[in-house]
Image 1 (cartoon, rainbow over the protein chains, first blue to last red):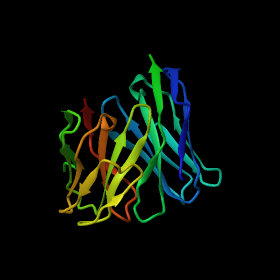
Image 2: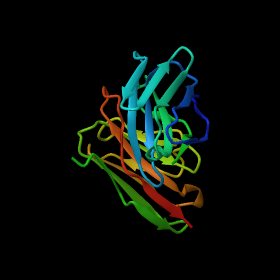
Image 3: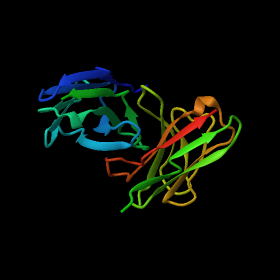
Image 4: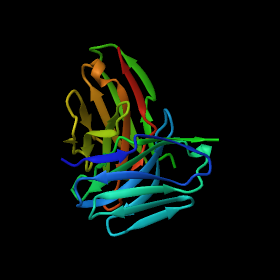
Length: 113
Length: 112
């Protein structure tokens, strides 16, 4: 059974710090990996999508990497801001017909002003 | 362009009652999904559909039924609600060759 694990479960940092969120998956035969942001009581906002053939994707202060051989992805947030406070979820999509996502349980980030 | 819209946004049910959650997408996507999210956990797949008229079970299908009579709509039904079905439900859609999934804003369901 495919599993996705996120470490740490919670993280608190002072404003301005660079930080890394980790995601690991058990099946290297993934189609892609996606990072989402979820604010309390809200839906999911897609941040970055990395195809299995790619090594990284960047959007503004966010950089996501993918290492299929080790079953790991990281989300790097540069110069964190209080507005970055949210739960970050990673999810992988295996190369199966249904194209459904398998989610980690998330990292709850708090950026202190 | 509304994307993925879920109805209702909130609902409280008594144990044993039934209800239907509606998901509508206007992106002409073939694939649609229902997930549930419980506190401290990621989303888990309940049921999915790869096209109009088709449905299939996901990881946690017990107690739920689904229908996909029209391509743009995916309905999730609870025939006899139980407190264990208290959760936040998310609908998502994507095209077979597109790899980005689009999510609705969620339905918060409480069963008392």
